[in-house]
Image (tube, rainbow, N blue to C red; front, side, top):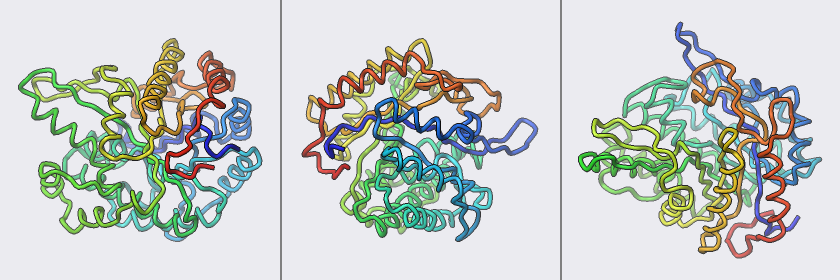
Length: 402
C-alpha cells in the first residue's frame, strides 16, 4: 500500500450506551447487535474490501470485552481482527464508544481512567500489528449526552456532572494513548471528535453563544494540552475540576509525545441556534465543514481527517458530494487533510432519537442497508473513491501513515 495514499474510510457503528427506559429500567443499546453485525461480521468486512476502501473505523464491544479489573474476553475480537488482517484492511481501532462495562457504572467513576488504560495496554499487546487508534470516541458528545443532557449512562444534568464526565473521558483517553505507545511507539491516534458551532439568534445571547463556542473545544483542549482562557478555566474549577487535575493535562503534552491526527466529525445537526431565552436548537448547515474545520485547525495545528458524516436518503448522495467538496477545498487551501469517512458501512438503528428510544427505527445512513444491499449512496462513494484514490496523497503532512 502507498504509505502516502489518502485515507478513504467507512466504519461499523458500534455505540453501546446505557439508556433509562420510561419505567426506570436501564437497558444497554448495542448498535452492532441491532444492525446484525455480530451475525454478519464476515460479510460486513468483505463489503468494506469490495468497496475499495483500505481503512475501517472499528472496535470491539468494550462493555463485553472488559469483564472486570484485569479480566478480559477477547473471543469476538480475536476472530474479527484476524479476519481484518487477512483482508488487509487497516483498522482505526475504536476502543470506547459512548459506554462502559456495567461493573464500571458510568462516566462519573473516578477510577475508570486507570482501568481503561490497563484495557488499552492489554489490547495493544494482544494485537501488536494494529497501529491506528481512537481510544475514546467523541468525548464532547459522550460527556454532554451522559453528564449534561441526561440522555445516556449516568443521565445527569448539571455542570458538575458534565465536568466530571469530561475530565474522566479525557484522562482515560490520554492514559490509553500513553499505554498503547508503550507497546507501539509508532502508534497513530485519530481523535474523532464532533465539530460544533453555536450561532447567536439575538444580540442579547451573544455572551452565551461565545461561552458555548469556547466550551465546544474543551475535550480537545484537555486532550492536546491547549491552555485555556480564564473563562473556561474558571468554569472547570467552579464545577469540580481541581487545579492539579487541570495541570496534569497541560503537563502531558500529548500533541508532542504522540502521532496525532485530529478527526473532525460533521453532521447537519452540528450547528446550533442560541435563542433569546437561552435555549438551543439545530440550525442546520450554516457554515459547513470547511469553515468549522478551519476553526479547529487554526487552534490545534494538527493534520486533519474527516472521520464521520452521514444523512438519510434521499439527501445522502447530495450530502456526500457536498462534504467531499469541502474536504477537497481544505486540501487545496493548504490544510493537511489526510482522509474522509462515510459513517457507516451499514444502516443504523434508532439514531433518529440519539438512541434514547428503543424503537427499532431503521435509519438509512449506510452505504448498505441491513440486508447488506447497496444503497445509491454506496455506489456514489465507491465511484468517488475510484476517481480520487490515486490522485490525492498526503506526503509531507508529518504523520507516518502506512
